[in-house]
Length: 170
Image (cartoon, rainbow, N blue to C red):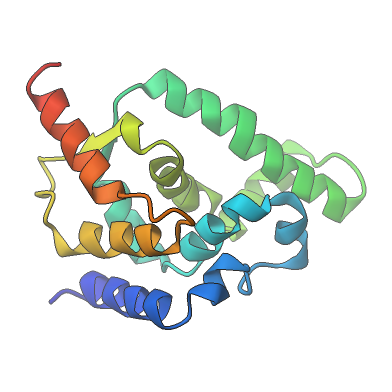
C-alpha cells in the first residue's frame, strides 16, 4: 500500500470515527468559517485535512469534461471567496502579489480541483490513463465525501456512470 493510499485510508477512518469534526469545520480558521457556507463546510474541512502530496495524486485522477465551466467556477466562486477572505484579513483589497502569496500559503491551487469534483461530480470523469475507478486512493476520497455529505451523495457511482457514458461517446 502506497503512502498516499495509507494517508487517505487514515483520513477515511477519521471521517467514520468523528464526522462532526468535518461537518462543523473544526479544522478551519475563523476567517474561513465566515466565508464558507455551512452547507459547504464539510467539503472544505475534509479537503483541508488531505496532505499536499495526496491532493496532488488525487487531482490527476479526474478529468474535467468542460474546461470552460471549470474555469468559470474557479474565477467566479473560488477566487472571489479567496479574495474576499484576504480583503477582510488585510482591511483593504489585496495586491496581486499578496493574492498569489496567500493562495500558495493556503494551498488554494491544490484544494480547488478537489472542491470542483465534490461540487460538480457530473462534470468530471475518471482519468483512465492514470487509474481505474476502483483505485483505492479515489475510493477513499469519494467514500469519505459520501459519508460526510448530508444526503450521502453517491459520488463514486455518479462519476463511474459519467465515465462510462463519456467513454461510450454519449
